[in-house]
Image (cartoon, rainbow, N blue to C red; front, side, top):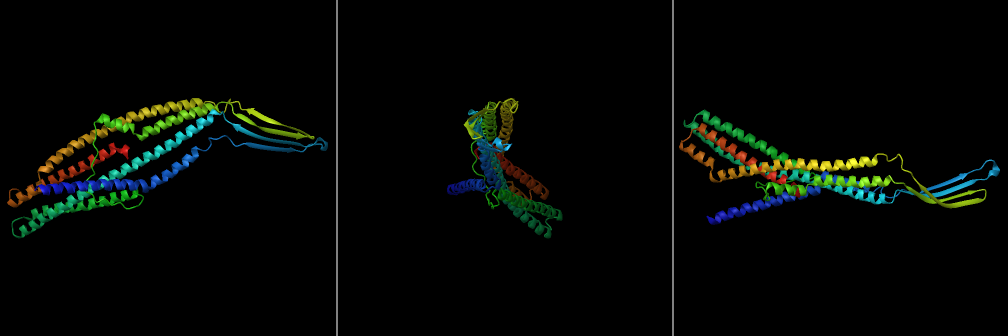
Length: 392
């Protein structure tokens, strides 16, 4: 007996490890093959090049004028100049810093998208495990009720049962077969969703056991872990850094521009040449831009605070749901580990201790309870996956 128990435990552990590897392999495959992630990775590369454009000084300017004098004796005039216009020197450092912050933000946005897609993939995997497990249970029920139905048909021929008994068994069997077909349809639909997430490459997940879930600490610690790794907060923080860098750029652009170069002029056989130096006077072009960027910086601070408050209550609701499901699942496990109502009901029915009505009512009640258990088990695993979304 001990060897049998050890063998069963070993096989269950192997199934759990296989399920763990299966889900992890699917997540890895989706990371590589998902069309949205591939497209957005290319988009990020394009944005990187865009942000690096325009942070260097303007191109140099070359001018040449050849002016014909009138009357003829007035002579011709030639003007030639090469000039370079530059913003106030500190603004280039600020522009480069702002570009780096913008690039970092696009990478965080890609990471946020990846987390959402991988969470959707993981919850779909868990849904498929739930459906597979339910399918196996429904097949067992169809087999069981088919035997009861066939037994009642024989009894009716022998005058030991009525047509009502046969009809009850037939109706329950029909309902189970319909549920089995609908569940099979859901398996195909969920598999198709996983295939779509995997870039069109077929995903096969026949598992009926969930992977091992990570330990969930108390809410305060869990919330701290989520917030410390919250990619949305990081994106908003980058927005704040970008606003801060943009404010410095704006202040730099509000300072005079410098223009320097070479200028030569020739007229009537005489030539003049020398340096060209100029300054722009910032009076109207950048009016109110500094005030605008200060307002944007304040908005970034407020948005971070708003998100943290909103996210705290989202985490709290999700954690409370997890805690309720954990307790519910624990109670179900205690009950179903000690009883097997279907076997007991079959024995009572065969011995004549219960009527067909009582049998089918109790059987339906047990089926309903077990379905609730399977659903709670799925929601429990999905709630943990959502809590640990930041690890994806």
